[in-house]
Image (cartoon, rainbow, N blue to C red; front, side, top):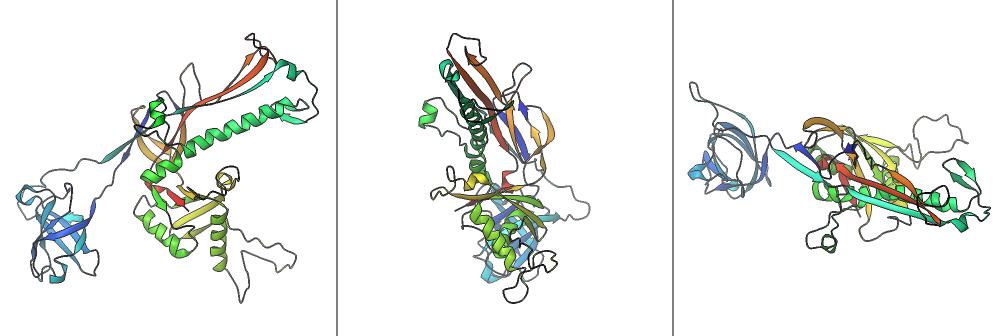
Amino acid sequence: MPSTSDLIKWTEEGRLHTKYTSVTAVSATGGDDSVTFDIGSGNHVFRAGQTVFISNNAGATSYKGIITDAAPSGDLTRFTVALYNAAGIDAGDTAATFTAFVYGSEFRKGTNGMEGSLEAQVDIFEVSPIIIKDKYQINGSDMAQIGWVEVETDNGSGYLWYLKSKSETRKRYEDYLEMSMVEGVPAESASGAIASSYKGTEGLFYTINQRGNTWSGGVPDSTDNFDTILDRLDAQGAIAENTLFINRAFTLAVDDMLASMNSYGVNGTSYGLFDNDESMALNLGFTGFRRGSYDFYKTDWKYLNDATLRGGLTGGKINGVLAPAGTMNVYDQIESKKMARPFLHVRYRKSETEDRRYKSWLVGGAGGASNSDLDAMDIHFLSERALCTLGANNFFLFKA
């Protein structure tokens, strides 16, 4: 998608509900039916009159009550709850850690309305595009040589040997365009890159590592592992359709996991519909599966398997990425309006007079170029772009 600014900004809506997971009781004794709780740090968003659910993080007990004071003694880290149960708080819970969230409210007849209001929570994100360049050069004399290497060109095929290097330069450059969006990192303050006036950009791996979910337990190879992933997705956007872009070890582990659930008899195999033909080739690969209400489609990511790139790494190895399907509604700060954007998309610089999505031009005095006195042909490539990862909390990065 085009962008006219060198700073891309967007706003994502925050959570509709707020839950606190490190809540403690303050000076409570067993049997107390009015208890003051403390969230630990920061100011809570609870208000008087709201009803709350409070659950023991390490036990089986839970309580429901109504907030009678949202800031006892003016302290916004605390709130006082009148419990609905007559027995009050259990003595064994006075030193426990709780999770608390609001589920409604209750008011007496003839009373005033709710005190205070909540402002919508928004997160503002931004990313800067980077300029990516490459060049291929061949002098005029070498271009006049006869070559017998057949190559494919933009206009067909031929036997001009130097065009092979040109074609490989273009393909390599196009790989760089994608790899920069995947691997890019912003330059840290006081770094050598910053001192040299380079800024970097936020690539896919960096963004998921900062704002998304990471799996650091090797390759998920069991339903228990994926159930853990489902629990995390439930706590995020709960997007039903997701794609796994994974390396060889990961895809084989998923195939083995699914195959182990689809066997017939001792060491038997039954995948899909078969006509009992002994000459039929057995397909041991799977393209996807459903677990709970989630659909997972998997595909091999060549980049993670390529021996000249990330394939075979030990340090910093990535086994795959889980990306949600569909779009997300965000507020575009530059366009000043709300719009639907793909979770993952590239923005490039463009105006009425300049399109920097993918530029290529010839410079020199050979090979069709005639705009300088250089006895050579330079083929220049340029792009200015950035990756926008929306709703990064719905992504997973699988580390080794």
